[in-house]
Length: 446
Image 1 (tube, rainbow, N blue to C red):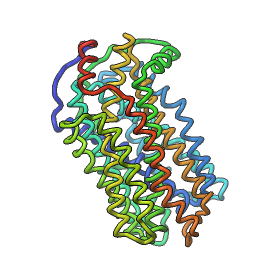
Image 2 (tube, rainbow, N blue to C red):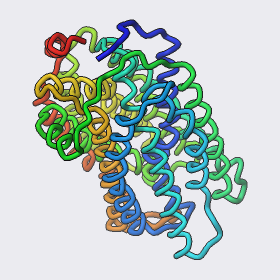
Image 3 (tube, rainbow, N blue to C red):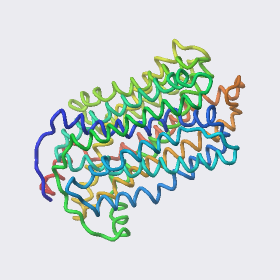
Image 4 (cartoon, rainbow, N blue to C red):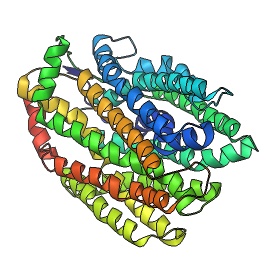
């Protein structure tokens, strides 16, 4: 293993963070608005959306591991991961633009178009995201620097999410006039261009300073090694359960703001923005707390606290009660996301743990597997949202029944809380603290 052991400059941390801002042009639209876009703008039935999300996401069962293996196999003069940010930036942006374009087709043909563009944007997302989440492992071997870099990364990711959540609904209304579909096409086209430029900036502002020796092992052996890595398996389960809870809540937030709280586009955008602002503030708070408090305890305790807040929000917030709904949602999203820098820095440490335990390193497939867990969680959550909207009797752009309103508040609070509880219980079994990781570094001489 060859390396240059040095600190990261603030500029490079910003550059690294810009890559996740680009990624979040897609992922935030998936979390926050795509379900609403497909039902209320594009015109797809909730039960058809459920099948779309589930089938397309599980295609990533193939795409993610393959991309992980590709990043292990090929290296250029620009590095192992950075080239993808440069050469795929434009195709990535085009795929986002096409996904949020509503063609004037019959319902059957619109479904075909939706499947085609959703598959395309997911493939492009895989091809840039797998290198990106692997990228931290070659920036630095210092766990504090990794945590700091991930703090920058997640801060810029949330800024991008803020733009998507608060600006896009209002911009779509303003730019579309009476054609809301056209408005979403233009506004998400602007977001797609921003994502493209951010990936290019990430490429030029960062450096791969660590080079790991990659073992050329058959994929079957790599899977066996991963399944022996108990800490990686815990993170995989954590990512899956946490993503399901997070996506159910954030997917239904715009429905909740519109129908349960009775808000117009400004209220909807503001409600989403409050959640994203809370997530942004959670990033520096996480960095501050983990300098003084065990990061793993922070992780699992935050997930259990989310359960308590969710129960209180369900019990206390009534329809159209903006004065309670907004602060509750702010607190909920703040606590939900305070563990995020810990999780994303833990993946590289879990890879090193497996290397130290077995003497063999599995990197690309490990990061690809975590990305698959995230996307599988998004698929499961998207399917559940579609099925639950249908089961509770949701009708797009109409006055909702008592059953439908109950469903919206359950999907914002108690249903996601179940998955956060699972996440917290899993992380209680995770053991790679900073002190533990020092032993791993000594064993691997990194």
